[in-house]
Length: 132
Ligand code: HEC
Image 1: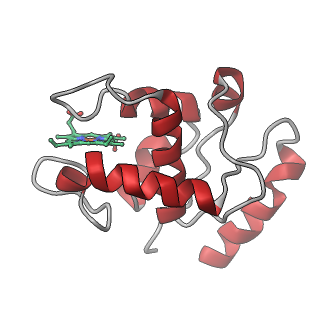
Image 2: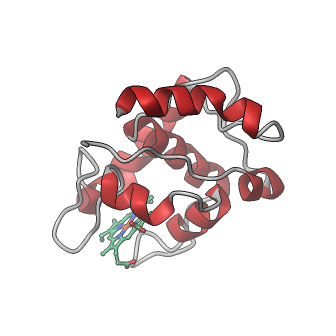
């Protein structure tokens, strides 16, 4: 199953010429620091979710977001943390998103994930369901 998705992801730039989902390793590392600071407490070290907080990786999360735009996901993240919504900059949210993408098994690339609204709107969440 994983292999199937890796092939599908490799084909994405062909079927989706306009925007390929991309982020850099450096960006994900920066995102990890932000995640640890602002999100870890509730969503957990492995993004499995703690108490009321849902997972940010794995089949349930992918089921929510597959086919949705990354902008929608960034806007959802902007409602977080629940007691301080809207406090993180878009750049910080996009960096956290890149770490979330890494945790969901998407490979690094040469180009960072952009904060550009149009590109984020055009880029869909392609996550494979994990653990199948
Ligand atoms: C105080 C606990 C807490 C913190 C801190 C927190 N979250 Fe959440 N998060 C929740 C809860 C509870 C929900 C589900 C209910 C809701 O939407 O309020 C949620 C839902 C989400 C969802 C929707 C998941 C889905 O499957 O659709 C995303 C995405 C998310 N959080 C991202 C983040 C990010 C990114 C951060 C850090 C910037 C963060 N959260 C910080 C508690 C938290």
